[in-house]
Image (tube, rainbow, N blue to C red; front, side, top):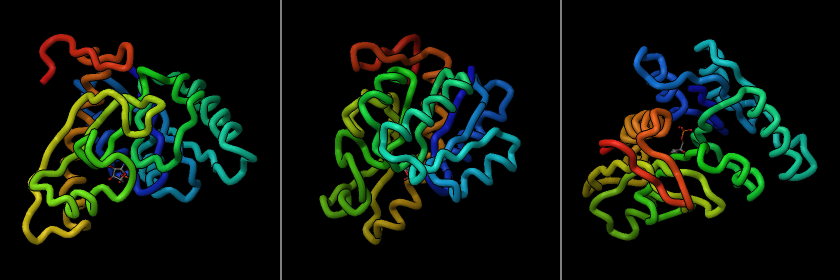
Amino acid sequence: KRVAILISGRGSNMSALLEAARADDFPGEICLVLSNRPDAKGLETAAAAGIATLAVDHKLYANRGDHEAAIAEALDAARPDIICLAGYMRILGAGFVARYKGRMINIHPSLLPLFPGLHTHERALQAGMRVHGCTVHYVTEVMDGGPIIAQAAISVLADDTPDSLAQRLLHAEHQLYPHALALALNGQVSMADDKVVLHGTSR
Ligand code: GRF
């Protein structure tokens, strides 16, 4: 199975997926890493790992639709079975989401449906949460609202700051995303009618 990854920056989740995909028994291979920002550090990391990379700079396009059409053209040429958003920081239009619905997933740094959107660590601390976490979900037209594939939770410590919480959560993200991607690749989960369907004995 073929996996394309969309990034905008550091790409630490992308790196975790790259690392997981090196295992012989991982049910997929990374066929493309694409960024909307040419200076994304993750592009260098992927290229160094011998993965095909592409920058489709959103600043070079008149509008979101043209930019997304260029991304779709590049994605379709790579023939991915699953598309992973990993720190991809652009809102995706309904047409793009519809085109890849059921085969595009995202990782969000909160226990959705709590804290969709940005600044999730600050908001979790502000809310006095005792646990925080991350979610991998199918992408639908509702931002951070798609059906959930898998989640991981961590404890909030008394002296946590948004940064310490974010750092600790990243480690959980790097475990969760490869696990969730494998479930989607091997058909243990799928999406139908905007709901996740669990097949077999996926946890
Ligand atoms: C992470 O918190 C991830 O959950 C969110 O973007 C942040 C940066 O991710 N999607 P990465 O290091 O670029 O993978």
